[in-house]
Amino acid sequence: MKFVFYANTDWYLYNFRLSTALRLKSEGHEVVMLSPPGEFGARFETHGLRWIQLAMDRASLNPVREAALIRTLARVLREERPDLLHNFTVKCAIYGAIAARAAGVPAVVNAVAGMGYVFASERMLARTLRPMVKLLMRGTLGGKQSRLILQNPDDADAFVRARLVPEQHIRVIRSSGVNLERFLPVQPIDEPRPLRVLLAARLLWEKGIGEYIEAARILRAQGRTIEFVIAGSPDPGNPRSVSREQVEGWAADGLVDWRGHVEDMPGLMRSMDVIALPSYYREGVPKSLIEAAACGLAVVTTNLPGCREVVREHGVDGLHVEPRCARSLADRLVELDDDRVLLRRLGDRARQNALEHFDEQMVITRTIAVYDELLPTRRAAHKAAAAA
Image (cartoon, rainbow, N blue to C red; front, side, top):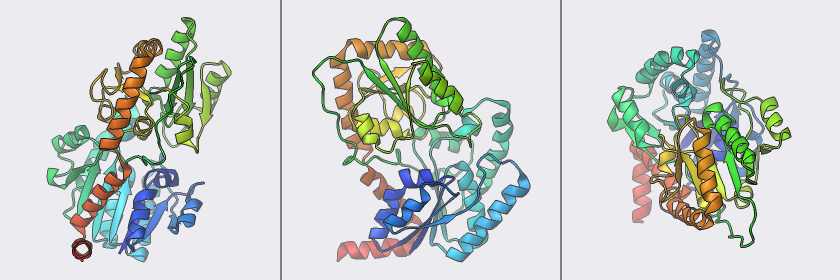
């Protein structure tokens, strides 16, 4: 069988969905990766996967340009003739569902990891777009031969309440998973040293970047020697991206050590003590939090949809901070700086949560089970092989 994975960046497909593609390939299926051009796409060839480039402006609102994109996408799907199309992110899910219908693709899976800018922001543009996006979702994502994968129950409830997708077509799979063989626990360090705190994310204001920097200012004014690190790059395709000049200015002022895009995230995380994500973005389940949990870092985040899938109980498996409150974040970091026993206990519990709930192989198995719901031939072949 043939599968096509479609996302708005090659970076997303490579970092979040490569393992699923390779599992399918190992079972004898063909997987094609489809995205706009980017620096990660060429890497698919080294894994024996074909990559098709499709020009796409993530921020475009030009109806003529967007209609042309959907027509091109439908043409690609007619040429490829996949048995199943898996779309990622809201825009790709809507466009992919429309194009799949036009191209006669038998089965479609849509994955929406968080509600994104349109639903997370209260800015005028986001509020203006929201009714139109909801209308498009309602008309495209609820097909009989389609399923919608969400990463947390809060989003599932929101989709059902808004009557965007029938409840029987929604599947909740918590996160895209973490490779527990790569993200290994940090080794405890006996000698005293400054607390090291990491924020790893796209540099969007709603991820709590401003609050993170303000917390660094507060603690520096108190004379604390806590090290603040940021891993991640600006996202020019998002209207709420922090500019490169802004983050370079913070680094120049000594508030933060900015690493930009980091290839070796396991290595970086094993040199840290805490992962902080004071996000008020409508997250799915943040990848950086589950990767850090797998490394045994103490997790500090908000008690909001997606983030609370990682820290369920304050003081037990992590710490909660108030959204949009730098003082709350600063106070939590002081608590961990002063109590290294608590720091270690929260890190150990975070690792246990990762083992129980976020194992990448478990997530892949559950994702493929959704494919099997829509592909009876594959399901029958899989059962026959298991019986044999």
